Length: 96
Image (cartoon, rainbow, N blue to C red):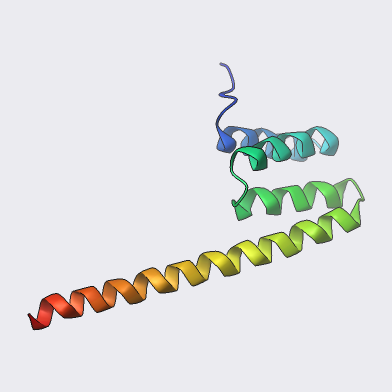
């Protein structure tokens, strides 16, 4: 089996497995590669946060936590806008 180096999910999963083994420095490298490929994935940032915490680098863990909050807020706003647009469009078709 080989790792698809262009797949951020593969890098995230590999990092997660290294975290389980408490090999946090290697996990962090994997998470950073995943983030380079998909920078707006809150799950990867959350996993990176835990790896930094395990590595006792609390400042970087805190930075990641703030990034997760920002991405989740951005994601929920986007979802609300999409839902609102969908409701408006379905209302139009109902009344036409």
